[in-house]
Length: 455
Image 1: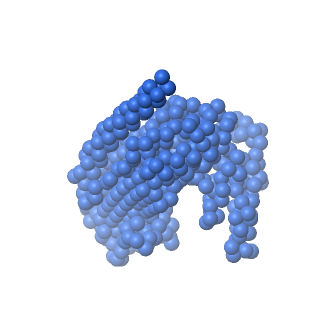
Image 2 (image 1 turned 180 degrees about the vertical axis):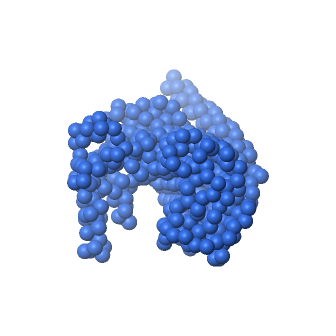
Image 3 (image 1 turned 90 degrees about the vertical axis):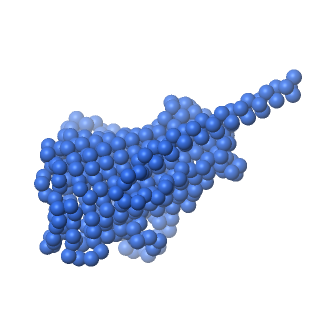
């Protein structure tokens, strides 16, 4: 009987593995068709984007002792499940329905982290659970990975960053009643009465670090950790990764920026939701930084800062650190800008397509910004089919520190200086508040962009 029972279990597992592999293969085949459709007929050559290859192994975090009671810390169980699956060559780590309290989750090669519908991954509000990074500029992100290949985060579950324990709040963004309630909850208010912080350590953190670094060339991690509550993490931080897929989950209540892929290649982010309060300080929706070959589509973002933002810092690997990015069929609610370029473009930006997106209630629709010492070469930017409603200030805004004389053409920009803008695709939008001309400052060059088709 025992032998038959074991055979039955083994058979069931084999059938499950085969079925899961079949379902995964079908899902990836569908996504590959969408990738082909979204990256075809672009005004620039787009390399083929490769999806992550995930082996058919499956583990559930409950097999490693995880408990979905909302109180038990599951940091070890979740990370043990990921490591165990990675040792088998990779596979899918399943987080089933339930409330799972955890500290930082570190991803690995060839791993799909699947957060199933009904699953709420609640990140710890204990600051000591987040080690200070070696650079000393932030603490460890709730979800992170570096130098990985074949990484996926899928499913219809939710990641909650417990951001209210990290973020400051500006008084001007709340009603009088909300402000009184917030202050009564604890925390600290700045001497000028304009900003609330969750703790005195967080409020004084910036001044403490500035003084520390002025008096000591290489502060120790312990010294920097004294300002840990000020060093807010990004929610999802992927650095130098290849073949990345984010498909389906919701990210909410984050300490700072939400999605932050940096120097990654072959990245697909689809059908993902970002939900933050409009007054959430520095809660950018997606900051795509120095990446190449990116497809970002059918995502919905409600942000407290920039919605979809392009960033590029200097790179020794490529002339254009940020290159070949397609953004399509997205919705941005609130936020400082729907689509934003900058403020750092010093690594170069080339081949960006933004089309068929809707911005509602953002401060600005399309925003292009660059600090005086952070500009770089930018070319081949194409924006088309943008719908805007209830934009608070400008449909299109170009920030610049000072003016230069330049020449223009009807279809693009020709600068008198080299290594600046070469072409800027026609911007076509439907909005009631777009102006005929806007000024653009980036890369040490001010040019006049004539926006056509705005009415």
